[in-house]
Image (tube, rainbow, N blue to C red; front, side):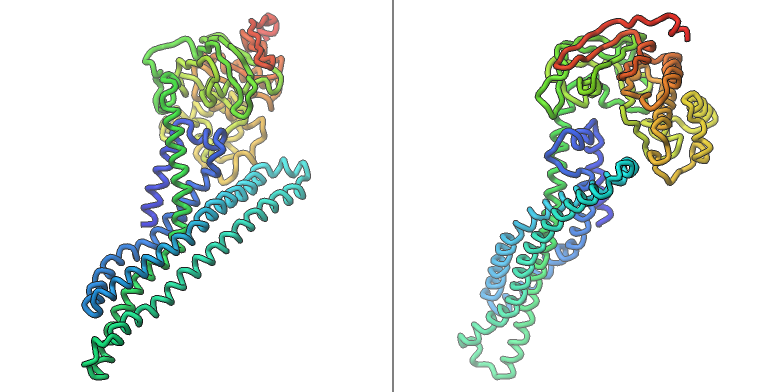
Length: 505
């Protein structure tokens, strides 16, 4: 039950989490849901384990309660079962009151657990950068600060659980007294005055057994209150995540039928079923950061057409990368609209983010990402293509380092590759996918101008139309138009005059 429940619940959450851009919205834009990764992995696991531990009692209890209620009524009359049921109701209400603080504190404790784990993950991912800063003392202090906050909340949780445990144990002990009170009332009332001492002793023994066992059935259910408080806490966190994901999906499902959100990367066809010569149509667009009220760009209108290479420049903070987020529909426009007339992926539009993303898996899986590893089928033709594009990107040596295209490596790609190698590998991925439009955000910042020029020439030879964000003046010779973001909403669009000698080079 535990394995099946965890499988079903986790797969259901994954289906919603990875649909559209829900995972991006939860991790970047929404602040009302903490640690969605922890809720899906750790909270689901604990919930299913606690529920499976409760299942046996909950399944058996109705049968045992029915059986011993009948025998109790037969032995003691209506007073016995009614007294025991009333005792159970009182115990349930009391423990329900004591459970309230436990559930709320457990939710807070799990949030802090996730924050503490995230801090250690942050240090793990950025260990080299922190080491260059000699930041061990500072990180030690900040990590301990999170630990102290977590331990303080855990102490409060333990205190609340103590009162709940005292309540549960009190009713366990009181149940023993109740069984003898139920038997004593009819005896002292004179119902059994005609029995001999031996018959009375046998009656007391028989009735005591029935009453005690019935009370024990109820106390076993009351004992579940401690486990039930944990189940309630985990259910609240998982349910809250599911509700927010459903809200995000409802917000994102309708806003642009041409955005390619439902595009399957296994398909090579345009969503409109025919050729197009335009990637983006931007009409009177104004946008700002979700974290600020200041507009980055106002009333921007432009069209990105096939064969017209666009360079976006501007000082830091003027909204260059933000423009790509709006084009990719990661951020909502404040005014105006953006229409994407091509699909995402091969033969369509592909974005290369500023920070290279390397997935886990083999070298082949790195190159064909985000295609599924079952497509295209591996073979000599596909191997030749991959080798060709790795060589064009200048990272053919990775085949030897990894032991082959399909050799599973046990190291982290970010730890092994230099920033330049990661950018080159992303270009090999771009060459392999060969989209009609490539949107590049500082994609050559770790490379020399000579390497940059070679990669850009290869992109054009493969038929790509480029939209680039960058600071280098060397990028101008690879583009036809320049969009300069000036800050405070201002912008300039002009044609780039390329030196013929530079073009020839």
